[in-house]
Image 1: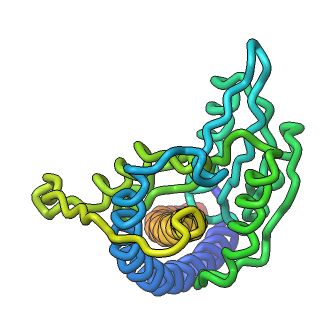
Image 2: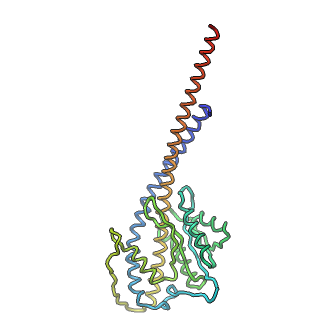
Image 3: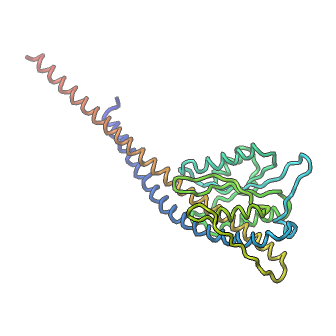
Length: 303
């Protein structure tokens, strides 16, 4: 059994660690509250904007704009796919990074494609480079409070790359925020804009509290002017909106996962302190018992 001095030193060390994890838990809880609020507020906007786009897009042809055009490869030729991978810059957030990276690797193994990556966050960038996947761009300076202006360079890059015919599909690997305890990794196609995908997005966003789909609110819009220009502008805006929403979902998931991880670490530290305190008391009691035995033996030998 370790000596009492060593045990006291370990108890002090664990208490200091607990103070740090508790502080990080409180900071993450504050950031999570703000991130979740932004995410939920943006979902409403995403629903309305998607409703407008789908109401117009259901009556147009794919050739109205390049962002609506599905590109097929001949024979066994592989499709060129660009994946935007959203992770964090820091660790200590549970399985948040591992889940979305694992989802990406599983997707890559299941698809016969030429994949290149735009990494957001240092963790994803390191993982993709380690696997030998070509990373064409890396963004590691996004703030915890994500704004639309920070997302514009990423959305512009993806839209431009698809418009210039460099890729046949644009995907985003991110983490859906479900609750503080549940975050779900997901991979979604954002380009080409699919009428079916837009409808699925609306069906997911327009659910009432009972989990049933809300009533159909489609509107027949009267369009004046150049319809092709309008459709192209809407397609780009809805794509930016989707990317922004995915970043908000990922940010809320990251802060929730970090808060839970730090709470678990604080709880584990408390349990360790209790175990070490019990060990310390046993060691001290053993020392006292040994000293009493030595004194009794000495008195017996003198008498």
